[in-house]
Length: 115
Image 1 (cartoon, rainbow, N blue to C red):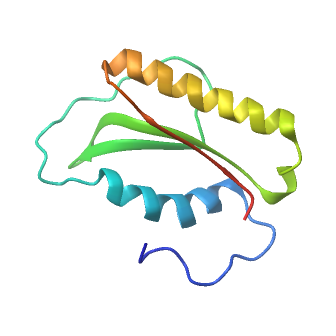
Image 2: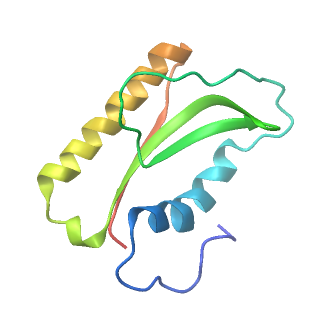
């Protein structure tokens, strides 16, 4: 929470700004555990298009397990229900693929819309 900016972002902001400015500082501490000694190489899975955000374990310089996926839409898309629903379905598909691939019990899925 300390890394979340105290000032509002200037309009218009993009999906990358939403993910890096607000999502990363909030979600990172939930999965950051440097004392854990598990290292598995991340393998390419499933669908061609990637989500806007992926939560992964990182051990030194290697990717670990995926822990979640997310999508972001800018404020201008807040009324576009088709795109919002499509993104929500994509998050569910990415998480389901990862649960099956990594044989996990659960994944974190999130969607950010607007400011």
